[in-house]
Length: 314
Image (tube, rainbow, N blue to C red):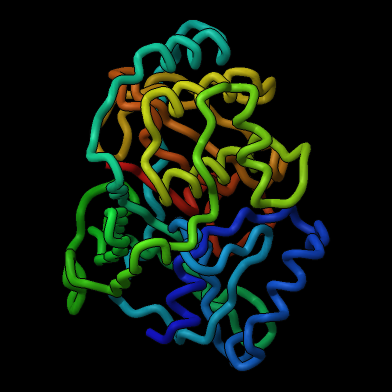
């Protein structure tokens, strides 16, 4: 895997609405990608669920000449979550969940499982094949530097059952990279501990204000794949989400790592086409997962609804 491919694969872009023009910053960054990397008759389009590590494409989708995805990728999208109705408004429930947050995990370490949709485009630009690329990513931040390690995740069928694929070794190393002290290019600074400050904090890398709730969720996902939040920072993030009027309660769910939580959803980023969903632990673990689901009716390569990317923090 060459360096450009690695960097683009490491980026989790915030996807624009259909027909929405790129910002000046995004347009400039897109032009910086070598023409050879954007050329080729068959090219996969990865909607990555990983943190923006070296190249942060705020509103663009990276297209790289990687060739057709191997048979090692699961061809079924992850199953939809099955919520059980609960009583309470989003504001009340999120405020209650924020009060339950307790310290957990190892400071400085981020580990998550992720699935992302890969599209193979033909000469005419039409989607010829879709697949799901599972991976397990570990980000370690130490006083003497940082390290990223990406390994192949477990493929699942459309019912969520693990499957074995010939030639695909679960747990095998995909790529790794080490950074010296001060070299890791963080996209975000230090997260705030006050709810009112969290919106502007998430907007800053985008270079614009007034973004949708769906955009905030994707930005929050980018943040969580980059660094670990303290309990105070997590509380502020959840209390900020409690102020979003278009975030709806779906109900109680068991997440993809078999943990209980409450699911909240919005389609504000792309109404009628895509919905962003966040699952918050009711056992004090904070944010368990964030995902995007296709809910439109124009695509012929996917059923509707269908999960197209998913990140679950361990």
